[in-house]
Image 1 (cartoon, rainbow, N blue to C red):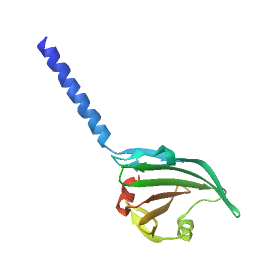
Image 2 (image 1 turned 120 degrees about the vertical axis):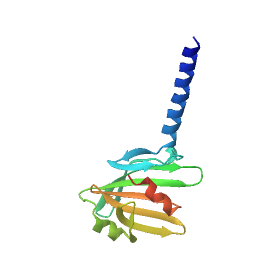
Image 3 (image 1 turned 90 degrees about the vertical axis):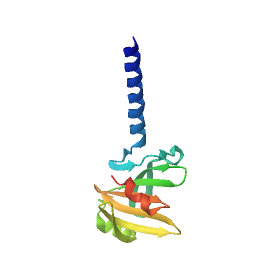
Image 4 (image 1 turned 30 degrees about the horizontal axis):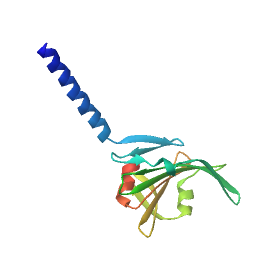
Length: 143
């Protein structure tokens, strides 16, 4: 009988340890077919979700989908835009603006405005954007 109780307690402790390991690890999400990492400690701010937001500017139209994540210190925005009739390439992102930069092995363009950073890069014909106040966080969100 004592062995059964001891075995049950051991399984319980192992189960809690396994849940703790999973909770502390990063996860991954997909927005419009583009994967992003979500570092541990960040949770989604569902009030900032953007779903199938249609935008038209002159002859160009596109659809934006995005999510925001916070760790109670900073918020990180993830956005994917799909352009009607256009495939987003490095040249397109370059024309949008910013300084060429490679972050976590991904070539893109970064802009900084009053301490807020926006890193844009082409991914599978779409425009992927990561924005936040801490430039060092951007690489943690790139899958």
